Image (cartoon, rainbow, N blue to C red; front, side, top):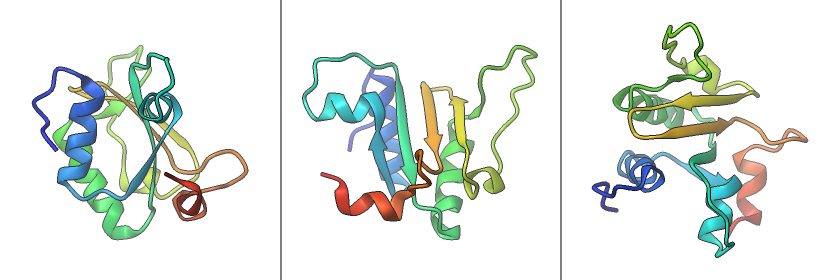
Length: 119
């Protein structure tokens, strides 16, 4: 996948793909990929929470200069591996675009539970 696109979502997807991050695309970007006539400005993913995958995702986040948003104090606090192993949603700003990492969707569904229902 080419990551030279001007589209932030395409660049984010390319980095995740290049680093072999196992994840499912959800939210507005998933709707766009399915052909819905919507516009989105961020990428929402649910990642597999294995230690190896979290390490790969941390590598991507480090390369992207990811930090929690909103960030009114301009502290640019980066996510930790323990954040990715939890159950919360991480709203991140990156040097490429906005990335929302949903450790689990409502109802406690993670990547493993969602995978059989994905296209």
